[in-house]
Length: 146
Image (cartoon, rainbow, N blue to C red; front, side, top):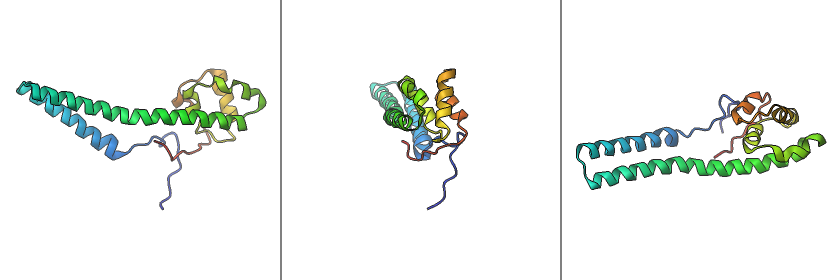
């Protein structure tokens, strides 16, 4: 098995080329093709094919969005359990105050870095997961993502 490059903020996004690039291109080209057809040769049949092509694009978007939502819910639970174990007593009370995006951002912080970063996130009101991920110094990789 090949070695994985260490995960960082710069390379942590997951792209599946056949899905994100090839399938997206095929579906967009298909929609463009049928829009062109319906403009040149207006008919009910071509109109329905435009609707179908648009529906396929909607399905493409939600095929990714639904699993990501479930993944975020699991991360929220996992991180709250992790925080119960790792945070000092003064930070255990506010665990319920962390918003989902904050928990998703904090999941990449190492166990040693989590208490300090969690305190900073709450104190400074940092809410964007990207901003939190950029603050992580000791990255805890996650290769099992949807």
